[in-house]
Length: 161
Image (cartoon, rainbow, N blue to C red):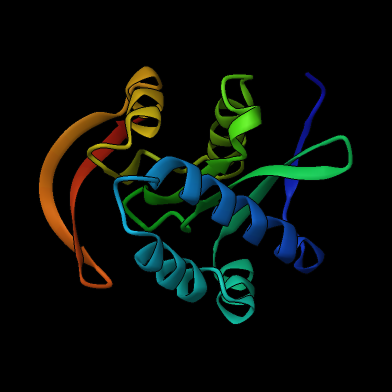
């Protein structure tokens, strides 16, 4: 499959919003009520919030056939070499083709001072959890998280570089 990884621009916002919504709806169908998903997505991926992310973090997109099919959002690396992977989402039809790995690798390449990369993933998100396990992330804790009134079982993981 032909694709390219590049830095996101403001012109990509609507396509990234589409990837986030499609990926969330597919991943969390039956796990998180649709109204809770919609509320979260509306807040987390609003135009204003996306512009803030562009200014304050590393956003990468995966493009295939002229369309954005995935993205990843990394926090800046702090003085201790710690960063957060806030999101890595792919359209369902593009999962399993190495694009998620390419997004992760490119983010680490562009932030070479990273010593530890943290991620929080919903415990029942089997696809996400398997991806992070395969990449060498290790579980460090589990906790309950309230998202718009819905309690999630969240797993905290770290990749030590």
